[in-house]
Length: 78
Picture 1 (cartoon, rainbow, N blue to C red):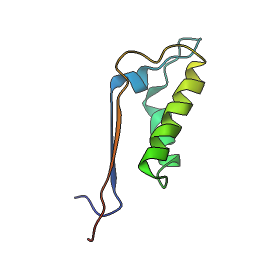
Picture 2 (cartoon, rainbow, N blue to C red):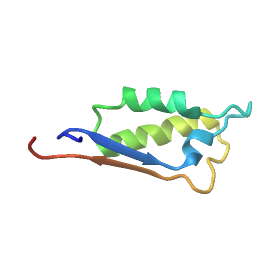
Picture 3 (spheres, rainbow, N blue to C red):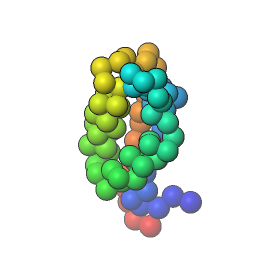
């Protein structure tokens, strides 16, 4: 059950597979921690933060050809 204030984040596998120069992938654990740390941010800010962190992690390497992120926040009364 979703409640007002809940958010759904949908992403492509490219997010988790973003690699750094050492060929280490960003991975699910890092991504979960990032989403938790940005939970209170507006959706647009959260997505911008995710992209910034991915670019920093990849240190200039391409992020891939199918990077997709979508954040949907539920508004309204309970």
